[in-house]
Length: 48
View 1 (cartoon, one colour):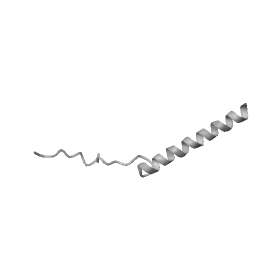
View 2: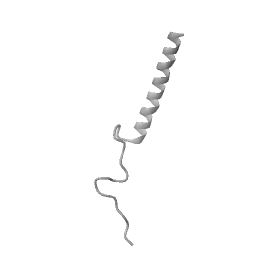
View 3: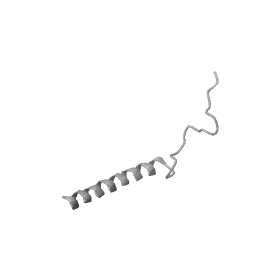
View 4: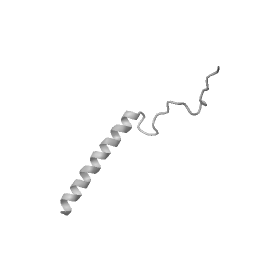
């Protein structure tokens, strides 16, 4: 039985489109999440 191989232009282990590795992308998402929370905290404090 032959094994199915994906086309050469679509390898199975594609990396993320930005940041190079999935770990870097996850770190970016977490940092942005923290920044947004802090930003909304500051807005809440200034408008209350």
